[in-house]
Length: 587
Image (cartoon, rainbow, N blue to C red; front, side, top):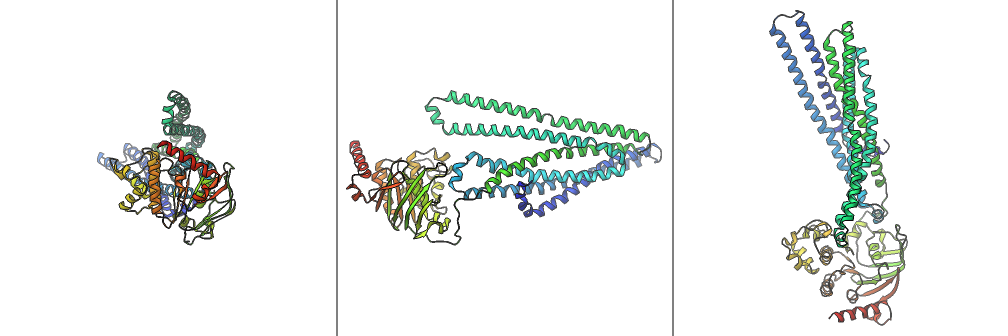
């Protein structure tokens, strides 16, 4: 129960609901237990009538009708309070589920990129969905049935001992056996359920990957092989499901068997005691049979509840592992800080934890507010890493990064990121309308602002040709669009934000040179007074920049303007000559 202590704060938050739920449960059980007592009374009335102590049919009929009225009334009241019990305690579990999911999701948002590189998306989703759902079962049904069992057991045993103490002792002998049997069975069910869940996860992962990569599967003609692999996986999953069902099939037969044994004990022992005069009425036997049937399910739930608690403990432990993970990027500055575009890298070095790749080695450069910096270099030279560090997606190993001549970690993190418009190399779009994808950069943007941003990104004409225009719903990750369209919508999303700093990470690689030229001309207009950093592989995107740096293996190997770098026999000049010849050749 150690891990489940995390939920205590939520139980305190909803303590009023829980206390009311407990009181309602007690009342519901009390009214439910009226039935066996009134059944005994029916036997007493009939017995008395048969002995001739009452005269006339009308008297017994009136008494029986009155007793039946009380039984129905008690059942209705018990049913009403049972409904209210579920509405209070089960609702509390839903509130806790809601709060816990929000807590986990909010914590996920705080964690750095390294965390997401080390953990699989499916596992993250399972912890916030499946694991939280299992914890909810503890916070709701487990607590409700525990309160229900204790209340019913205590009140019923008091009634039973008052009626026939020795018969009560005989009656409850099979109940602990039932509880232990159900507990053992529940443990086995839990173990096999875990295996089934694992295979269901594997099936989900396989199908998700297959559907995501369906174009590759079709292009290579490996549909039969993929189907065979899926068949093997689904067959194993089916076998595990059957193993689980075999064990589950024992649950209710075992309950029925032990209920029958308890009833036989009551009938035999009770009958003998009636014959011997130890109990005064056959109604007591009928009353005890009803008590046994009432107590059997609550006692059976002891094993079931224990299994739920075990599952919840395991799930909460998995949840706590992530909740206890401290964000690598800490926002230590709570007050707002003003961000402008003065950026300085002073001997900055950085190594990725997950791969141990030394991406930057003593990098130093500076750009003033409103200037444009272009970064070129081979793949893996560290270009994208510089942009990630400016957005403080990672913290550096050595050196310092200054924004407005202040250490980057001394700025409010929210203010820093709000001041940046970032277009990543892999343009990510949400399964939403094109309008909302652009407005992601500025939620309160008007339609005119959305259209203007799209025009600057040279994508307005493409969007206008769609049947629903800006209301077109995109497929997963924007799959319904071409690579160039996705990149341009991503650019529009950054521009509409109107940030102080614009970061473009090779975001024009999927557009043709003519469109690229138009976009760059628009960017020159829009980025007036804004610090702009453009990462790319084309000289055309860098030639108009105020400063150009060329990276190679994490080091700055060339630095200057377009004109000065052309005078040096280096990477930039060779790239310029190569791309110029390709352009002239295509023409």
